[in-house]
Image (cartoon, rainbow, N blue to C red; front, top):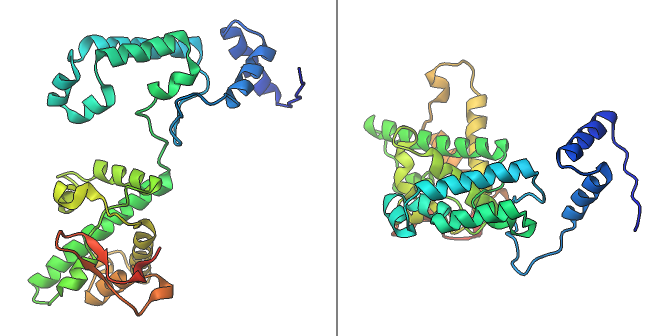
Length: 282
């Protein structure tokens, strides 16, 4: 058996020794099992590429999680169909009592290669940077929508092309990152906040699926919006007021710098944003 030497500080060693004692094993066996877990062979059922299932859980962690699954199995509706009639999303995540008992058995038996099934509904974390980006995007389109209404009420003409270019188009569900951004956006948009964007997540607009990468386009638009505001002095409402020229500049920022001057973004009959040329490349 090969030997690997790993140097750690005294505090880390003490924590590992305490963990080994809690599991009734030696420090050497604990470290070896953790390292072997990292090199765990693939199973016949490939784990999700974005799986967050742990490679190892303590007996205490497995018991606590298993108990929660068994409790849920006792209190939930008896069939998937019954739960689906109450809450479709809950049904998709929780399944039925037998599904929950199956997860409990996996945890109680310590079937490590099956942990992916137990944690199937847990997604990777969305970074704070990406969370802020989604908030910036939603706020940008909310502000644009509000200022377009304000200008029209004041008698200023806003053409439909500009309004269409400043309409939120969702995110690309075929891209892992953008799909996660879309899920967070759907979570945030409620009748109490960003209500103007609720319809963009309706079936009519394919629940916010843009069918094309949008993150880099939105980033350019957000950056332009921030640049416009940052160039102004003061802190009153006037600093954040967007006039026609500002709205036009934000809309124009959607076009990749290398493609400026050709094509424009327009809306298809379903109200989705579409490309009339490659001018909105990522």
